[in-house]
Image (cartoon, rainbow over all chains, first blue to last red; front, side, top):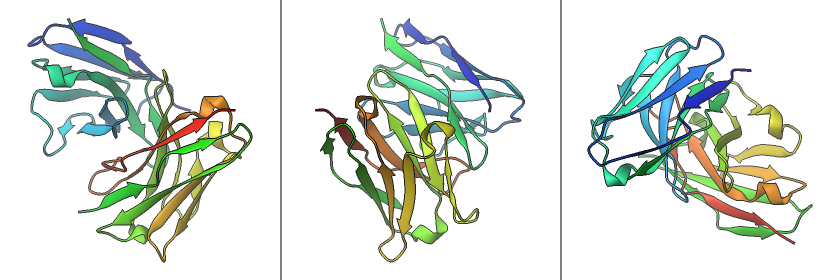
Length: 107
Length: 118
């Protein structure tokens, strides 16, 4: 099984700040890594797929990079509506694994 | 555009079972891979299992193997997830999701709250 870790587990930043979250996998997964935004009680929202592709309609302040075992997700200018938990996720493609999540708050 | 509509909230006693439905509209269930994800209070997102039409049989996360059953009724374009032997830790939001245009879950149902309480 592929193990996934995220860092940090939580963060607090000011509106307008640049925020970066990292995701590390226990084995090489090429670019099969996605990023989701989750707000409690709402359906998760796919933001980035295949490591660096922005989903159509997602704000351009979200971006992703990486390959192999190390990935990152960046919000270039944090907005109040970005308060959420962000999850990296690997597609196997029939098996899916989520990372533990990073809770983002605004100072 | 495909949409997934889930059944309403459920309250169950420990040891009982729950069946959550996910109706597909705007597309055909037989062409979709429907997956189930849950989020319990204070916990992260967990993929539970799903059914891929090309693979032809359900696939489950090891944690849920034996206690979760995924089925489909293609005559009504509805997918189902059964969870048996419910315990308090199964209290969660349950979501169905599908891989529609992208190689991961890009269309989601609205979620179903399941509360397990005596």
